[in-house]
Image 1 (spheres, helix red, strand yellow):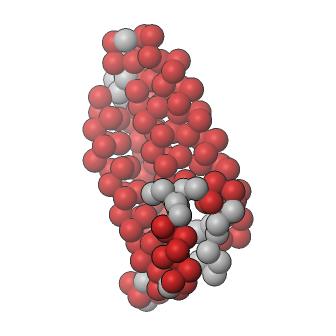
Image 2 (cartoon, rainbow, N blue to C red):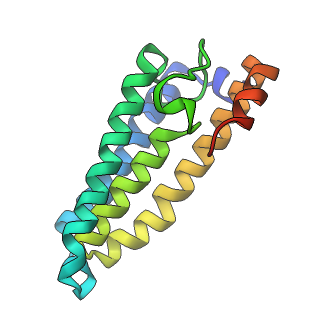
Length: 152
């Protein structure tokens, strides 16, 4: 995308810090804020933690599959189609959302849930759209074919 290509190095640096920090902010709010584990249903705490841990595994595996193509801002020199990217176009964003969702439900943080719904999910949707536009511009028909064979 031209927008990201034209950013100053300082602004790129700021975005590279702010975007990942937003995920940490959600975890910090859930950890330090008022909690009601499992939103008052203790039986859902362990399943929520397991779901959150599963999301973390997906998140880490997707980063490993990206290898040197990993970047916070959109753009790539390679269209990665290996590993989990064979099935899901944005496994890292899915992993982030599942991880945070699981942790929020386990902690029972209403404030964390609101921030998660208002910040993390929309941020990942916007990031996936930016990324898809950049990949479409870079890889054209190859990306369109890849997109047809994958989920989100």
